[in-house]
Image 1 (cartoon, rainbow, N blue to C red):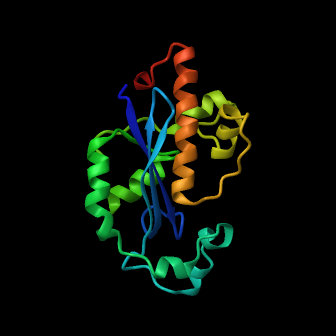
Image 2 (image 1 turned 120 degrees about the vertical axis):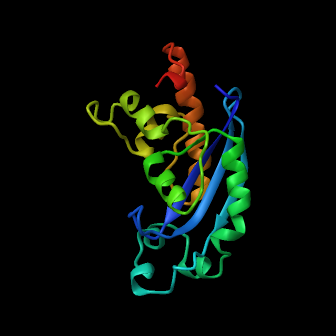
Length: 186
């Protein structure tokens, strides 16, 4: 396993990976040997297709976080960060708490993720045992299982989420090592 990986988290205006707009991107570096994290990117985004509509004003992200539609409308376009994001994706193995969501969106937007690290949600699910038959678990359940000594409630802001997902990733990687499982074997 490579020593450094990066965890990406997106906030979007809807849950459809085919039609959503990205409104926020957070990317956190994780040193898998020490657990140290470092901010790689923390930006709000205003995609060209994102406008001030009633539907967007009612978007889940604006009703359940402190991110506002006004902040997004004042933000730079995704293309301003495209080169930096792709450089990160080229440099690190990339993961997310739900790679099937985040990666589909990024790839639809033209990004290439050459080194994909296993999905944190799918890897954690059998160990969290929220539902032993399920292939997924909530981030909150994973946090409570792997980091019980540090109570936290997810705030659904991209960088904060990616940093906390990195902390879960570190604990998960060590949990698997203790079981004699290398994460690449998954």
